Amino acid sequence: MSEKTLYGWIAQYKNDLKHLFVGPGYLKPDAQATRDLERENRELKEELEILKKALRIVSPDRK
Image (cartoon, rainbow, N blue to C red; front, side, top):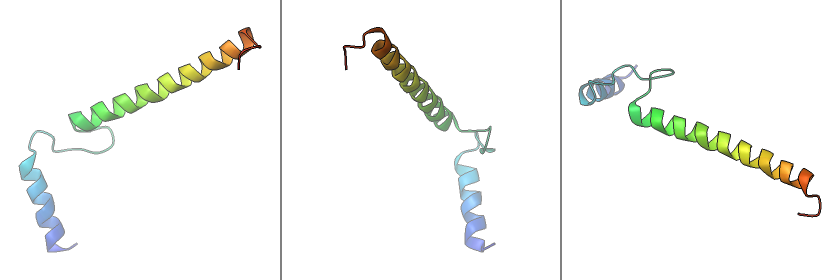
């Protein structure tokens, strides 16, 4: 491990003392909000596709 890497980690540590342990399961609030919005977006897209398919079944003359 290089000295530069270690000093970089120390600088990051000192800059954000509230959120020291980030990683899988421990995200910063903004990263968690982004993850939640992406999940919601994915679920809404799936629901939209289901509704489109249902509409095609109910009214076969529509494209």
